[in-house]
Image 1: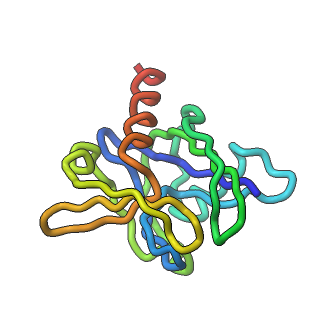
Image 2: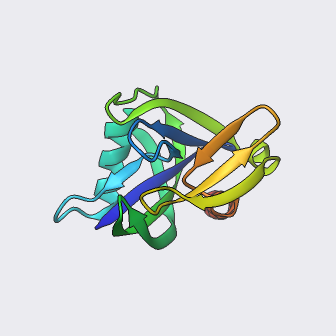
Length: 153
């Protein structure tokens, strides 16, 4: 199985959605590719289905890694993207909240990486009064931001 996701940047902020199904973590828009579907088509479909955003520029692939989801092996393909315009509207069957997360705020957190029950890695970002469980580490987010900066300037 292959899953695609878009790390969508708006300035120094990246878009994350909160899942309603376990693991209850914040993830970028994305999901499994359908049979015969090309990765970019799957990514655009998933972004549209999960956020209603139509104006997102897919810049480049940035992370590929093998892992587990729901106890099954999966290849995850992340793409760095740039937000262009549009209002976010979520599918409540999949996500109950969205946030633009500022990279500097994430960098100020204490971070612990652990595994969710299904085998997915989870980065727990902790501040004095807040905790976020994200699907991506600070290093992965910084890498995607550097790729965006290199290719967009």
